[in-house]
Amino acid sequence: LRSKAAEAKLAAERTAMIERDFSWVASEKASFGKGDYDFSKHDIPKLKTEYERIETRVGELKGKVNQKCIDKLEKAEREYEELTQKRKTVANDRERITQVINQLDDLKKVSMEKTWTKVDEDFGSIFSTLLPGTQAKLEPPQGATFLDGLEVRVAFGGVWKESLTELSGGQRSLLALSLILALCRFKPAPLYILDEVDAALDLNHTQNIGRMIKQHFPESQFIVVSLKEGMFSNANVIFRTKFVDGVSTVTRTVPSAAERAMRGPIDELSKGSKGQPSHGTLPAGRSALRDANR
Image (cartoon, rainbow, N blue to C red; front, side):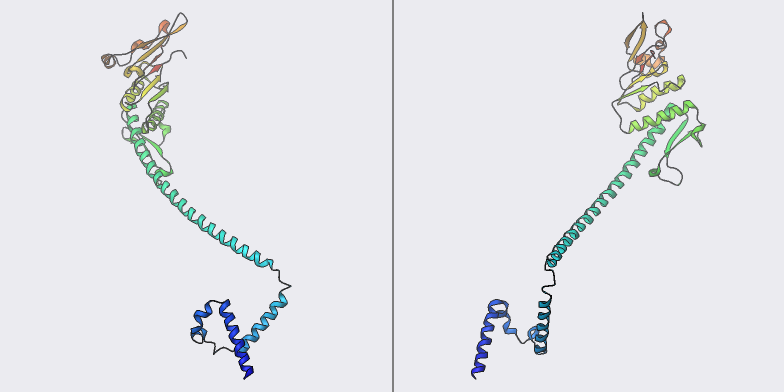
């Protein structure tokens, strides 16, 4: 009896120590022997033997295992988690950037189509003004879209040319000038300077340039350098340059509306003193400057 009483006392002390060391025991001990705490089906002596064997093996390996490896493993795991998080961040950023790129591509397509439509319209209108009886357009190559590029097509009398090589030098000059001015029409500037753009053209075409400027660029001012009289029939102001006793002189003339309507080409600009071509300029929304001292 004394032996059993001693064992009971020892068991009570160990129980009190366990409850003190593990706070959950006090709250869970009412469930002991039930559910997850039912150990009746387990071979306690066998489990104790296995535990002691493992403890012995751990003791044998204690001096052989590098304890720093555990620290290194924990460090490697932390780095892995950080890299995984960074990878997720990069993936999310990539997805957002891709969405922005797609949105910009869509806006680019809309903007390019709008630009093409406006430039194509002005291109045809300007070219038909410079060269009456003609048509011009910008269109994608056969089987392609405007995003793949545009080709220049020209028609005379309703018949479309197969190649621009069929055009004369003057016609190609007017075509190039029409395209440049059509691009300018998309976002007009307040001032333009044209330097002898009519050099390869005859008088009729030169007059058409002045008419085209007046018709298509009402909000802009042009300074036009030319050696041909027809350019100035639509000018608002003319500056004439001529040599007098070896010195260049400049005179300013403001033609009246009646003079511009009746005279067409301004004959007095045809020559300066001593038979030399004169130098003039036409400012004001539809202006021209003529340079004879070249």
